[in-house]
Length: 298
Image (cartoon, rainbow, N blue to C red; front, side):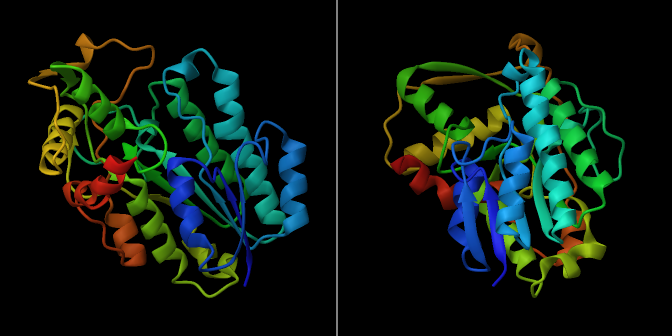
């Protein structure tokens, strides 16, 4: 079995990946306390000591608004660290799996974005994630970069948990209705990633060498944050939750000013990943139903 290094094991996606990666290799999982992504030398030393055949990076600086005030920290975690990982992956002949975001696009239009369309991030977070993609690609290492969107899950803070908390506390909420995307559970991202990796017999780097590139990995369908929230409230009541919430108002993004601009169109085409790896992606409503009982329990 090849050794696998997982970074960000305590995050939403990291938890899900940690539960599955041990099935396909010898897992060495790290959180921010075990590996400082701000320290290039520490990253290099860890990879050189373990000599993995697969590196999975689920770690990221994801505080979108805070990144506007901490651009250098966001750049180190989202751009520089992936570059160092890619350089080390190339040196030890490992496959690098990395996760990116719909925020690399400017959100214009109404059609789903494809992987080959020009990027144009609106905020620091999106720019640093795009810089990370480019840095990985430029090293020439074998890599799979999965862009995803509107991620939520059982672990950590996310939109689903925030909506549940607010709906228990408040009688009225106003939620943005002009940003469109596909809510995607960490469980779906992890399951799809593992299904793709299972298609290879180690060494992973040989199988995926010619398949290296960027792929969009999101649930099927589309919705707005407002309609996503309505579905969350419906599910909560279906599971017997008593909510204080009586009224939900749809509002435009302009009525909810935040430091970082958000793209209005976050639709991502999944044709490439389906064609390349023959994977099935559930619709966002089904994915929410599947993981909702566990989210409620946390």
